[in-house]
Length: 229
Image (cartoon, rainbow, N blue to C red; front, top):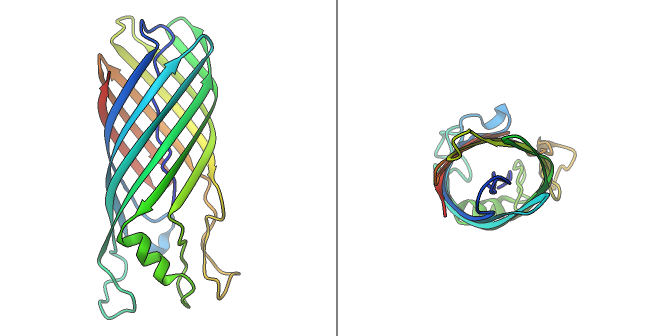
């Protein structure tokens, strides 16, 4: 399990309107974080909607998301293997919150110190499958279906001299609460996946009312496109 942290747009201090609604759709893909299941593939879609507010010296945003996808097993191809599966579906629902301070220099808002968090709840076949394997010998499972992730951000956002064009770069480094390693209770000294420290690097672009985000994290990438209202 990873994290549902995602870039949350907010109006620039130089915008004529300092509150906005952002709606976008996301396609994302990823793989295993090490070479033990490097043939497996996760893909999915997600819809995001959020509100962004800009005040005198800080920004706030909050929103909700929901999505669906599939986990494709391409590492083990033996259909006779115990608990074999080819593909499992999953879905999730959750919410996000972000706040940061900023200073302005010319065309640039420097959001040097920020905080982000999200909560997500997973549903579907893959979550149920993990729960059935928890504690079985030889399986290393995280049976949780709820994640809370939080961390710090640093961001630079600017606009061109022609105001309809905006660009941003953001770095997030944080932690998903709890023990995120994959262990087997029958042999807790063995760890399949170590604890992961989520990070995300995002590039944001706004052209008039169209918004685009490209985001990379430890296991894959996301491309989002949508509108600002």
